[in-house]
Image 1 (cartoon, helix red, strand yellow):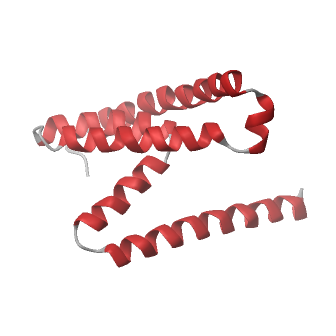
Image 2 (image 1 turned 180 degrees about the vertical axis):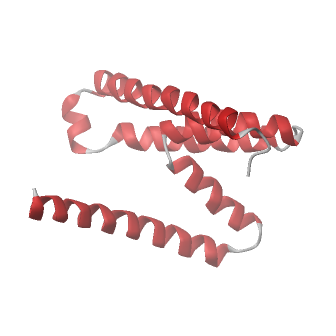
Image 3 (image 1 turned 120 degrees about the vertical axis):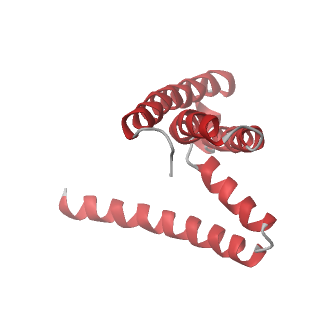
Length: 136
């Protein structure tokens, strides 16, 4: 939970989310220009790169925030972690959570979390597609 006033915390997340979403869109455009549309239609290279980069940046952020005071941590965590990286990719938060479990000596829980997250996310997506195809 944040120590920041709720409105201030929300504005940090909103601003960061807008920045992250635009960065994701622009990186996808850049990669399509770099690799070409045919390569992008065969494999989701942009998504893979965005998720990997977002996870790298989340790791850097977590390491930096660990050294800051709690009040300063909150603002940067909300703006950059939840906002920018959340808008850029939610995979970065997932990656951090998995690694925290591993570092806590819970590799079985980390593995379970990976399997459940991926399988449930894909299953939910398929279910959502089926619902829209059924009712749309």
